[in-house]
Image 1: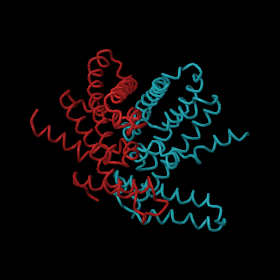
Image 2 (image 1 turned 180 degrees about the horizontal axis):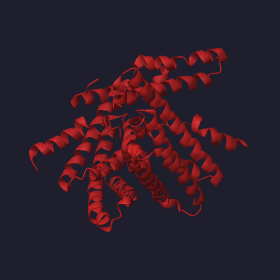
Image 3 (image 1 turned 45 degrees about the horizontal axis):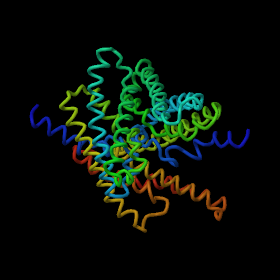
Image 4 (image 1 turned 180 degrees about the vertical axis):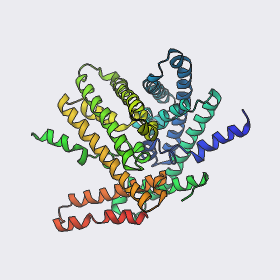
Length: 195
Length: 210
């Protein structure tokens, strides 16, 4: 695999095809955990970790078990179970290794299971027929793209939440969504946007 | 009709999953680009929600508490697979436009949320009503957003609103309008006439976005 191919996958995952701002996947944690930069960083890397392992395990299971047995239709069920197990393992490990991060992530850690970015990426990897190396690079860059969007959003929201000029009905999520719209426009610029 | 049934029946509107509970935002933004996508994805979600609610309610005394979440997810994933195969076989056009988002119904938080918050605690009939009501609430929200975005992109020729940025923007504005109306209704100081006037900004919000 040439260096240009690797670069194009990385740039697509990070910027042009950003999972949150252009694919609109993983919005729940994007809105829920983006109030503080610290927890945004922790959440971003936790998701990246789950994304990488989940994609690789799903890819291997699909290629070496589901395809030979011709039971591809079980894809959804098998993938979601793998993700649920991985998140459970991460939960146990984090509780032991880093209790402070564990507490700041709170319920959102368990909710990585239902983060559609994870299942979405696992599906994309299978549907696009990527090889194992491409799968690894793709899932890491998608995860880092998620982290980037989360950190940027947290930086903006830390300021927005203290701003008294925002109308009452826009407080909280609505203004966050409008902010996300502006960020999404900026990210669309990377892909050469046309009105 | 007793109060509980009535509350459950109206749950989809009063506790609208999209605008009030803010669950299932990803498919909402991604697939509300036009009305037909909204209806398709809304009904697919409604079917899964109804079936999973009924099944989980039936099994609520059998499933041990410690393993309930994996059990729920497997039940939900089974029904999603049913929908996935059905749409791929009989509705190829719909499959092309929303196909990528059908497997993602598994991770739509509305479904797991209702399983945990409602179906696990209530009887089969109430759970079925809750599934239909919440599913319809979700479908209506998708249709509302889809109608606004389709109008802006096709009639007003603003293709921006088909992009994900437009989706975020319209979703935020409609949610703000929802908050505005709900606060107004809750505020008893307003007379009925004022209340009607309060609904006006909704249209203006949308115009502003243009």
